[in-house]
Image 1 (tube, rainbow, N blue to C red):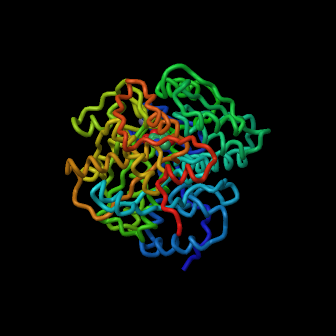
Image 2 (spheres, helix red, strand yellow):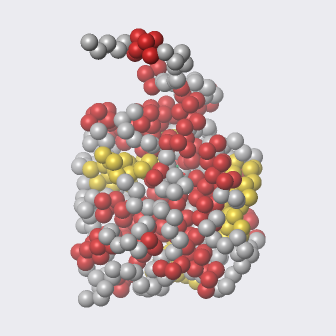
Image 3 (cartoon, helix red, strand yellow):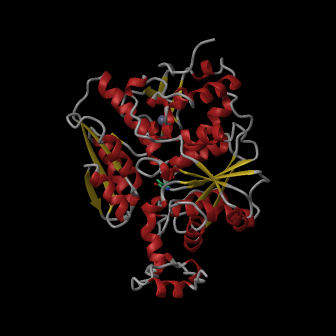
Amino acid sequence: MADHSLPQESGNLVYSCIACSQRYDIYDFIYTCPNCGSLLKIENADFDKLKQISGARWRQIFDERKKSTVLEIAGIFRFHELILPIIPLQDIIYLGEGQTAIVKANQELSDWIGVPFYVKNDGFNPSASFKDRGMASAISFLNHVIRVKNLDNVLGICASTGDTSAAAALYLGYLPKSKVRSVVLLPRGKVTPQQLSQPLGSGATVIELPGVFDDCMRIVEELARRYHVVLLNSKNPIRIAGQKSYAFEIAQQLDWAVDDLVVVIPIGNAGNVTAVMEGFVDLYELGLISNLPTILGVQSHHADPVVRWRNTGTYIPIKVKPSVAQAAMIGDPVSFPKVKQLFENHFADRFYAISVTESEIMEGMLMANRHGHVVCTQGGESIAGLKKALDAKILPNSKCYVLDSTSHQIKFSSFQQMYFERSFSSEYGIDIKEDFSNKPISMEADAASIASYLGLQKKE
Ligand SMILES: *Cc1c(COP(=O)(O)O)cnc(C)c1O
Ligand SMILES: [Zn+2]
C-alpha cells in the first residue's frame, strides 16, 4: 500500500466557472470567468483518482498525520489532497493556523440555549480569525507561483471588514519584501481599533475609503480587472480551498461521525459558509463521512440578504445598517451564487438560515463569554442564531451542534465596551440589559474596605 504519511504533489487543478463550466489554467490570476463573468471554483480533474482509496483508509491517513511533527502539515495542509495537492510541501507557508480547539459548552450555557453544543473557535488562529485558513492556502499558492514562474513585483490586495486584511498582511509579511507588496482597503471607521492595528503592525499599506465593505469590494474588483494585482478576497477560490479545512477538522474532531450534526456559521460575504459546505461535500464524495451535516447560517437583521433569500426564494442585495457583527455586515455577498448552487445540488434539505437582532447578538456573545468562552460578536451571532432556530423549531432533530466563532473576543471588545458604557448609537437598536453590564470599581488600596465591599467573612 502506498505511503501517504507525507502528501505528494498530485492532482490536476483547474478553475471552472460555476455558470458556464469553462475551464481555465490555475496559474492564471483570474477571479471571475472571462467568458461570462461568473464566479470560479477550483476543480480537481483527478478527483476520481482519490476515490481509489477507500473512505476508511483516508480517515486512517488523516488520523495518522495528526502525530506528524512535519510543520507543513501541522495546520490546514494535513488535508493537502483536498486543498491544493499540486503544491509541494516546500512551498507551504505555515504560521500556526488551523487545528483550532472545539470547546464543549458547560451545563449552564447549554441550558440557556436548549441543547448541549460545542464552540469551534477560529479566534485561536494566528491573526485571530478564520481568515488565516484561506490566507494560508492563498499565500502558499502565491509563494509556489512566485517560485516556479520566477515572479517579482507582486502586489497582494484585498478589501476587508477587518479580518481579511489582518490575515493578508500577516501572511504576505512572511514573503520576501523584494518580491511582494501588501495593500489593504478598509471602510473608514468600520473596523475595530484592534483590527486596524493588525495590518498596520504587519507593515501593509492601509488605504481607508468612505462607505462600507461593499464599496471597498467594488474598488478592489475594478483594480483586479484592470491592473496586475493578486486579489486576496474570498472571491479568489484559492482562499475557499483553505477554508474548507474548517469542515475537515470538525469531522475529524468528531471522529468522522457527522450524522445528526448541525454546524452554525455566521454569514457575511458567504465565503466561509461556501467553503464549509464544499468541504463536507468532498468528505462525503470520498466516503469519509456517510452523510452531509445540516448547516445553519446566521445573519444580523441589519445585513441579512441570504436569510431573506432562504425564506422567500428571491435574492435581493440590501443596504446594510450598523451591526455589532461588523465583520459580517455585508449587503451583497460575493459568494452568494455558490451558496445557492450548493443549496440546490447538495444541501436542499440541509441548509437553513435565520436572522437575529443586534441585542440578541450581544447577549449571545456576553453570555458565552461569561461561561468560559472567548467568542467575538460573530460568535455571538452563532449562539443567538442556534437559540432562536431551536425556539422556532426550524431545524431537523439533531444530536450534535458545533458553532463557529469566527474570530476572537478581543478583536471585538470595543462592542462589549459600548454595551457596558451604553454608548451605542440608536441605529444599532440595542437594548441594554443591566444583568450583562460590567465595569471596573475604583477603590482605595485598603484590604478591610475591599473585604467589606465584597461582604467577606473574617477567618477566626
Ligand atoms: C469575514 C468574517 C465573517 C464573515 O465570513 P464570510 O466568509 O465573509 O461570510 C464572519 N466573522 C468574522 C470574524 C469574519 O472576519
Ligand atoms: Zn463562465
